[in-house]
Structures are given as C-alpha cells and as structure tokens.
Amino acid sequence: MQADFWTKRNSQAGLILSIALLVLLVAEFASFAVGAYYVYDQPLSNVIAVTNHKPSGAVLEVNATALDNSSKRIVWLDPDISTNATGTSFVQLGSGVLLGNVTTNSTGGVSASFKLDSTMLASLESDGQSVHEVWVLGLVSSSSGLSREITSDSEQNYTASSQGSGIILFATLLTFEVPINFNFGELFLALWTIYLILFAIAMNGPIRNIVSAIRASSTKGIASLFDNSMLATLIVFPVVTWITVAISLLEQAGGVSTGSLPPADPLLQFVELSIAPLREELGFRVIPIGIVAMLILFSSGKVRDGLLSLWHPSRYLKKNLSPEDYTHHMKAIYVTIAVSAILFGLAHVLLGAGWGPGKILSAAVAGVGLAGLYYVYGFPAAVLLHWSIDYFLSVFDLNPALSNTGDWITLYTLALSVAGSVVLILLVLQRFRSGKLGLSPDTWFNRR
Image 1: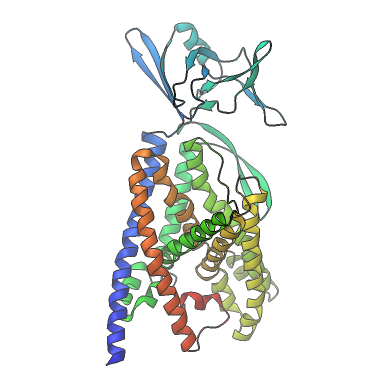
Image 2: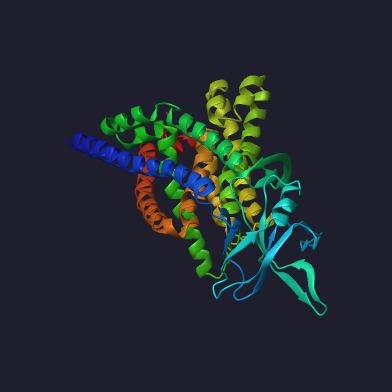
C-alpha cells in the first residue's frame, strides 16, 4: 500500500514537473523570436540612425545613448578609425563626411537630424563602403585644441548589415582567431540554425524522445525525465544557475569581488551572448574531456568511435570498454572534468573579460555542471545548458521594454531550481540506497 502511494505521488510529480519544464522550453523558443526582433526589426545599438527621403532631400535621423552627460559630440559618417598598440583610438580628420556638432543631454543622450546634400551623398557613394557607419564621436581636448584621439565613450551604430571579421575561439586558456568575414544578420542566421539543430537532437534522445519521456514520467515517475537530453538539461539549468548566483552573493558579502563585464553596445553584447556557448563548450568541454575520451578509445584501436566520443563521450566509452576498463578509466575522466572546470573558472579572469577573482569559483562550479551534461548526454546538452545561462537569461534584459518579462523568467527559474534540486537529491538518495550509485557520472542523472 505504501509503495503504491509513493508510485502514485512520484508519477503525479513527474507530470507536474514535465509541464513546468515545457513552459520553460516554450520560453526558450520565444527568445529566438526576441533575437530576430533585436537584429532585424528593432536594432539595439547605442546609436540608431535612420535615413528618410523627403521632398527637400535625404535626412539622417540619429538617436544615441550611453554617452557622457552634457558633452560636445560630432556626428560623423564613415570616419577612418584606427587603434594603436595601447588601445587608444584615433580618427583620420579628413575621412568620411562630418555632418555636424551636437551636445548630449543630462542623461547622455542625443537626438538630432541632419540633411544630406548632394555633395555628401556623392562622397558617400564613392568611398567604397557598402555598409555605412554612423559615429557619434567625442574628441579629446588638448592645450592646442582638439586632437585626433577620440573619447572612450564614442559610439558607433550597429545593425544586421554591420560587418565583422574574425571569430575568437578557445582551446582552454589559449585563444586564436578564425579569419571569417560576416555581417551580424548572416552570423545570427548561422548560429540560430546550429542551435535549432542541437535542440532537435536533444529533444530526440538519447534513450527516449521528449514526448515518450514525459509519458513515462506520468506513469513511472520523475526519473524517466532523465531519459531525454532536453528535459535533463532543463532540470539542471536552473539548479546550476542559482547555485552560482548563491556563491557570488556569498563571495560579495565576504568582500570578494566577482566583477562584471565592461559596458558594450547592446547589439555587440547580443552577438557575444549568441556565440559564447558554442565556442566555450568546444574550448572547455570537448577540449579536454572529449579529447581524453578519444585518446582512451584510440589506445584500444577504436579510431572511428574515438572520434565520435568527442560528440558524446560516455556513449562511446561504454560501447567499447568492458565494465572493468570503463570503471578504471573513469578516474581519468573525473580528473579531466575537475581540470576543465578550474580552467573554465580561471579563463573568466585571466583572459581579460573584466571579471573579478570571485568569478573563478562560480564559473568553475558551473563548469562541473556543464561537464557532467557533456559527458553523459553529449555536446548538444552542454551547449544548450550554456546557451540557457548566457543567452536566454540575458536577452530579455537587453531591451528595457522587455525587462519585466526577464524578471518573471528569472523568478520562474528560481522556483524550478528549488524543485530541480529536490529531484536531484531524491534521485541520488534513491540510487544510493539501492546500491546503484557507482563511479560513473551517468548515475548522477539516473541514466540506465
């Protein structure tokens, strides 16, 4: 009778948690639409420039924010900007088209219109740029007047057509640049295609697809949710998020600074949030965890499955190793997970992102969760967990008009983190009591 009662309650809890996770999944998919809105319909740049054609001629309307208060500015089209070895930026005074002077208001904003006469338009048409740049510049004053040096708060407009070149990738603490030319709109579409493919893969397995896992949870209980990669990721995501938040709050209370990212143009920040999950999972999970799994299989002569283990380490290690060999090699995997987590924490400080020393611990803890999902469920789960933390929790806050939505999502993940923590603890205890909690991280997630 008691067992039947527990089975019924467990099944009810599984169904309730499934519904809560599906709500979170729908919100994550909605954030794709928000991203498209930011890139194509309502650019988020600190400088928004719109050209209108009127009977009197072309007019450029410029609205800017995030500048110094009550300061003099120059609105400049297509200036040549160069940066020296010390990071100081200079403008070539004879370049581009200087539209006029403005003064920022008490909040650092600018709203102005400029007529583009035929001479200006001819100059722009002949300057060789397919996408024109609008800058709101401040020039540094000197004893002899204005210099070529521009102020650090000078702003450029960014849109879907803005050009970029080179993508920085990581190999743990080493960085290198891939020389790729792109515009933000193309990059957005490429990244979102990759993420949607990863979502589809995660929802399809590895043991059950998402629909089958939800059905099983309504009869067999919560543990069945961990048969699906997407559902497991959605459970772990709020838990990892709020554990790292709690660590940061405790560190700050103890006087240890976690720092913050430096101010950046919102559209540039959006691009960074979009690309970071992919490159950091490649650089800190596939390297070194996947490589260690690959080398283990290479040593057994399993070249093909060794390469495939970069995508899903536990699957191909279990497939090719005897239970004794698998248990033996798990020690190396655990060491590699710890090393990758430590390197991930250090990277946030050592690579100059702007974080303080307190960020090392919280990022390392997040690195353990990311590594666990990568090892057990493969590359898609790790990327989607990272994407949820970096992009999904931040994208709504980039636009003040959507900040209330972001607040509700944050509170929702807090509630899910409590539920998810209870679920994980109960499952671990259940496995421990049944004697099935072994060395493999698979047992963390109740995988069969």
